[in-house]
Image 1 (spheres, rainbow, N blue to C red):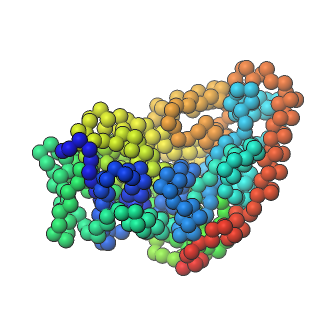
Image 2: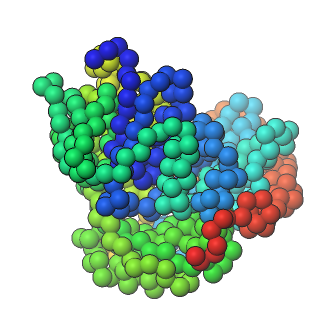
Image 3: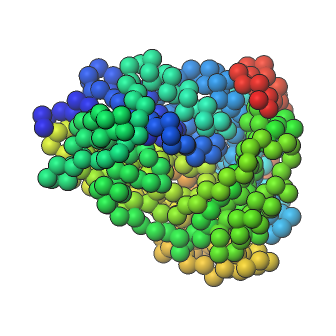
Length: 505
């Protein structure tokens, strides 16, 4: 091989494949590296990754995509966080907001100052200090101003709900306009050289595609990374027993709210994702505690609006490939692993994997240390998200079904056990470089699950109680005053970026 790559072949389309194509075509502009996508018309896409996290906005910007056009083409709505219903106990709910919660005071984390205020007798909620949470409660939204001296307008964050099938089509169209080559065919054989590198792919149209590097976007099948390179799989089912999902789309009967709803069910949880033209619904469950038939019945009994398609059962195994990058192959999307979509991290992991890959972009020597450094970083990302998802289950008080009884004594990774133990003691959470879930995110889930530290940081006792109360009350007032001037979410969508797709079409 020469010292620089000349070609990349992406095997599989769908959201992951076309995200890879458009981001790489942007990042590699001027390099003369040829990008080819092999997409089969015979292989359907899962197409249910429709709720995202704020990094989707970074992806859109990095790819130089027109945001308004993207929203209109994908029937997107805005998302300020996730509402969790019935997780602690039936009838109770809490909210995980995006963006900042509160302003740090005198160099101390805001959470510690808030704990001090509670000890002083204040009765405010954690979410009272979250711009995104108050916006969601009032169904308000507008795009954040580029520059603003108003703390509230500078510190909320948002993501998108969108139609995953339309996203793949939209990205595909842009990629082809930008010179990405698309081949419509099915891979029949993966050809390896004597060093275990992929040399070429034999297609069902009797052609062979050679490339310097291959990206596996073939879904759960993992045709390249698993079937051919046999990197192995790290199974996390013992931590997260849900292994099936049923998904269905319904007509939009209400105005879309700017948040996802995740509702705990007897054997897992269900999602509700409001788009402009329809609603995405699903039930993630464990077959050990629930049959497919019962899951479909549970989901259909909990939705509103006319059902637009037949319910689809999607089996999965929680975990990840032991190596996402091996030799000249990178696994992406479902080919790399699967974590249930409780915190809407699937699209984020595709983007983060690509960012890591670009930072560690190989030359023709395929340095093993470079590959290892990449795999260590993405492994840490997967483990962080895994632990954050487990947090929702292991802290629940529910024991009303066999599934939730199992959660009462479920195995918890040592990394998470230590994090919870330290938090329970004095409300501290150790940050590390590159982590995705912020201190505020962890606090939001723990507070929602009514896990309150035994004490606060001793040095915040130096705060004057009345001055602290005045400061916090002023923060609450500023947030509410600002939010009530922001447009209604649905009205903002209709005025600025209405979907191209007709409602319920």
